[in-house]
Image (cartoon, rainbow, N blue to C red; front, side):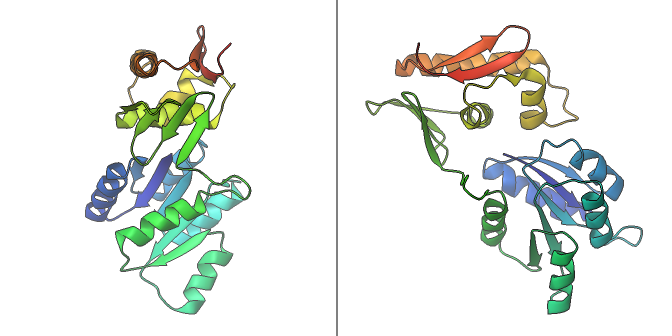
Length: 225
């Protein structure tokens, strides 16, 4: 899962980035409304966290612009305004959630989990495809006989993307954008290296489920043939 943080307080932004990375989220941080629009229009983010209060920009104005440009990504507004009328205005302007400052990190993480759920498509923490199980909480791949292997953060993010789109070829470009971010200097070789790591761990588990290569395009998660 990848988030976009729009926060013009650099210190707060750095702290939130560390928080989300610690909790296994991919995250990009920007500080201006123009950059926020540019990044948000890429469509690679699962949620946006928006807090801009500088004189030349305003969170509500930016929120409205995003919705006018048909950016449908869930958006959480962070604000020091606590009056009911301010909360109502934020939600009516297109926010999916509104969090008043100060807030606890547990609440912020819970709200992110909440807005990224889809009706009829709740994101499970333990999911199975074929004879392979992914336990996101423990960063593990498991087989049907109780064996398990630990995953690095990048391995977890890549295999989760494949689990979420079984039998679909995920392009290498899409993997780079989703996992490393749109402005990353990561190359196809980075993806290939991590795919090889994951395949080795799947081989260690002796599962029949496989990551198939679509030559020159990308990868898909497939049942045993």
